[in-house]
Length: 506
Ligand SMILES: Cc1cc2nc3c(=O)[nH]c(=O)nc-3n(C[C@H](O)[C@H](O)[C@H](O)COP(=O)(O)OP(=O)(O)OC[C@H]3O[C@@H](n4cnc5c(N)ncnc54)[C@H](O)[C@@H]3O)c2cc1C
Image 1: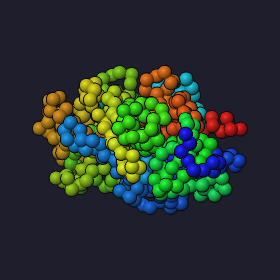
Image 2: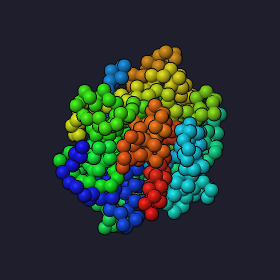
Image 3: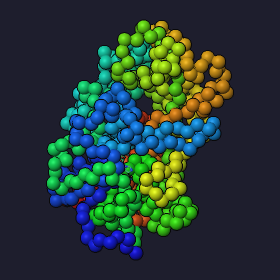
Image 4: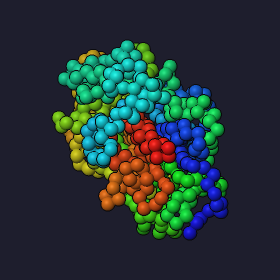
């Protein structure tokens, strides 16, 4: 049965969500002037390079409440709700993120184990997106839309430099380029920041020139409710305000939580969940059942205030390594000035953020209402798997070893969290679990895979199984989380699928 009042398509493609992936899709698909594109974005669309300071300043990762969907997890077993920031603005989460520009590693793609998605097959898209200031030409791109700069030692604050030196002093290697084969170690990383501005995809891919294309319409401050179907063929989008738009193909790029919510409201998901809400089933698929994110532990220290000259850049260097000498780089320890100083006895804090980057624990996203203005529920189930907990405890111990070594130790007045009374593994486990946070890298609510795989929601080109003319292209479709921060890989995935669509459309 057809559930729209209109009969002809208004557009060739409707893209829902103008974030890291959606901005790429809109930009690349509108290069073909014979195709009409509508980009629907829930947040504001500021002119490129004229975003408000609260979100464009790279010194303010996380942005502000006005540009955040304000997701929170369900309470953990210790009763705390975890903040799960997601950007609500053209540029999406790339507009409020840390702007750390790291790629997934070859090992991550090996785990994906999908035809056409090896590291070698992804490399052209990593290069295509990037306008790098330096680096190996075999590995980096120099003509892409996104400016990426390798930070140098001289860019680091004195505290971050001391962190790097102490980490080397306890036996880790210096890394020159985390995108290279030798990424196990410590150093400054690459960032998509220009003159203190976090360059989001709304700036890089939807430049003012691109936005002037006559075949591209951007509808901002518009929430997509659900996909309209004719039988099992997707034909349009219904907005929360009741407006509808028809297209030949619909692409959902609402992010791991946003796309899952639209799919579920549209009747694509676990049957029992949809039945309970009285949503007619279009396709029974495991939407939202296999979500992953990186659990994050704050090892916080009070610094001697008089020794700290500047806190900018707030993030710039990290240790990427393996917890127990496996070949997997499963631990990040990122050195950050992001700490509310009023909580430090010296009025100056510093955080070594420890994350498990190849977690086994799986979470869920689901809806309990058909109302598109109500956020879906999220339970990330962090550290449910014992191996994740074991690795996180080891990461916390590595952070302490770094903090105890000179020259970083000279900056430290005392440990704030977890605190020196926390010593045994058991005590560390409780302290970590009580305050567990998210690294803000959720993936895999609609994983890619063959129809016969029990976790797959979309095929290897992002096309939703069992229906026609509907894709998902964003972090949702990662078949598994990657060991790096996610933004660059999301952009590369979108570049790859956009190119395929463009080829198919002549
Ligand atoms: C605080 C923070 C720090 C991070 N730091 C880093 C980092 O330093 N490096 C890194 O690589 N990654 C980082 N990430 C992660 C990275 O930014 C994300 O993985 C990436 O942006 C996700 O891209 P996406 O396209 O899947 O979703 P998003 O970029 O979130 O895009 C989704 C878009 O869809 C819109 N939308 C959602 N639902 C609807 C709807 N129903 N109707 C209309 N529009 C809708 C949203 O407003 C948004 O614009 C960080 C993320 C956050 C939040």
